[in-house]
Amino acid sequence: MNDLINKRLKIAREKAGLTQAQLAEKLGFKDRQTLAAIEAGQRKMSAEELVRAMDVFGVDLDYFTDGFRLVGEGRFSWRADKNATEEFLGAFEDRAGRWVATYRRLGEYQGVKTDVLQVHLPLNERSSFEDAIAAGEALGAAWELGDQPAITLDHAIRENLRALVLYVEAPEGISGAACKVPGVNAILVSRRESEGRRNYDLAHEVFHLLTWEQMPPEHKEAIEVNHRGKGRHKRIEQLADNFAAALLMPERELEPLWKARSDEDINAWLNRTAPAFLVSAQALKWRLTNLGWLSKADHMDIRDGKLTANGRPAKEQQIPLLFCEEFVRRMHTGLAKGQLSVRRAASLLEMTIEALAQLFRDYQFPVPFDL
Image 1 (spheres, one colour):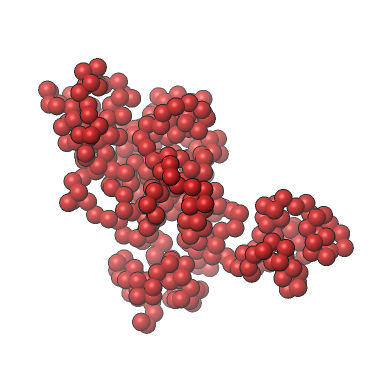
Image 2 (cartoon, rainbow, N blue to C red):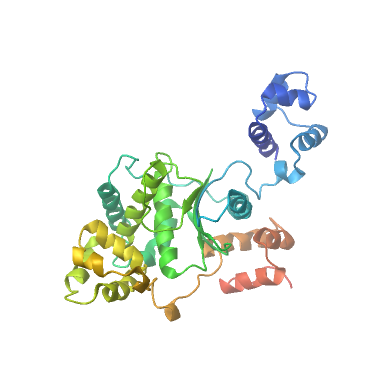
């Protein structure tokens, strides 16, 4: 607990733009060294000092002591529409941060190793689109994703990156996010999106997790396939799009379908073929464009309004279960071992106790509490 308080005191100070000397004076310390010792974990804060710190920063006690929330740790990159303000994203980010922090905290209680695999793609902002495409193709082969990569990608992310993939109820306008937190990498996907959009978002966020250090993404990126324009941010997103398309639609699987097209109308072919890869017809169009396979006549014939496929036919699509099995299992263990209360668990997940019980039933876990 003291380590948590010390770390968050430093985070609060830096966020407020205060020097150690300035905060030490506000807290009534004799000198800066006292505060430096606290931030370094060499001295504990007294209850009185903690109360003064709460007053200085205008925060509650949980800010310093609650291990089930993120404070100054998480880095998020959101896929959201142009109307999503930073305030709007920040509010949902606080909620999402609690889910990730809860997963990490319960893992600590349960002795689960939460170290993520630090796998990186050999790409940077100067890499070509061909480099990104080759990386997507190579990763799909290395992970043995098969002829329909979208089906196995979720599992491969968990196995090869030890990353948490959460299917969440996101507000309208938010499609998903990549998140890096000490000890946990995570991808959040809006479970109400169409199948094609969910799969594309998942592949796109994999790129960000694998290139975060050399190409940190923006806090907000637009929901679109084929980011147009110039600039550093656009360049990174274009690389991510090319990578995602190649990962989901490998050339070796796509080429025989394209060669068998004959004289079929291009719009009809795109709508018929996209479901085979569980992607949208729009994403498939841009994949063919990047491969250089579309003729001038094809480009003239394509009508975006006719490209309606977005994964499998709507009647065959299923909304993913909320969160994921690994996350729910960790919550179940935490409740069974008394590592958090039922009310706290329901509050963290923002659901009623009855809905929490149904969540366990959905994943075929026995309900670990009495209703």
